[in-house]
Length: 314
Image (cartoon, rainbow, N blue to C red; front, side):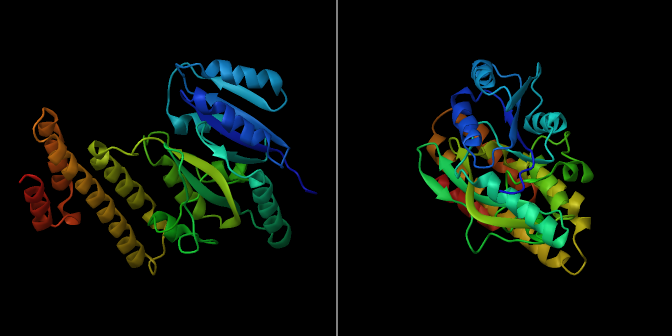
């Protein structure tokens, strides 16, 4: 590469000692070599300190670390890391994930520099995502139907596309849009992406970039009302970023996403009810099941709710 600006990779870590080596090695093996790794350890209680210090000793010019005394959550850790970083460009990589292609950073930097040089635009460059399950099986998340480029605000806010992660962009853009909402416990990354997309275009490198590890079965059914609550609040707060012409279609797409999400949780919990009907957990599971239904009747047909309930309590 003729243009090789310093790129800071922000790595938040909490009790991911078993994955840190794969994460660090995937960064250190990148073809874009002008990098710094900024590790923010969020008060880990495992042996993360030992692993981080080991890599720091071997790569003192590449790796800096800050060990927080109190756990503040991933958004807070990333925010601290971004403040500490020295690079003109930044990206993030969670400590339990890794780069699946050695050219990931190179391709993204090339793309942002190309648009700056040819069009005088500060764009966001992103790559595809490889989902890696606990059993080691992998799935490519993006395809020709769900990867969108350019002005993708309406698709991101309605969650109607592959939502980019670990993308590369100017550090100044993070502060331009206000950074993370540190008071929001979940979906703060989606909130940030909506605000970035409203000001800057996203473009795709065409390669698989980050391997994102999914541990266990993902989000718990018990948490569904909280997840839906925050999704809807973020959507409402950012809806002003959508034009009046686009708004009806964006509203429909988002409501459809919420409806499908809720039904997935409902169906999962109905199975849990059936599985636990004869043990102590039944009462609590059934209570959570009803909470989701009562929380927002607009997205659930009462007749369908009753049908699911009857089918699983026979």
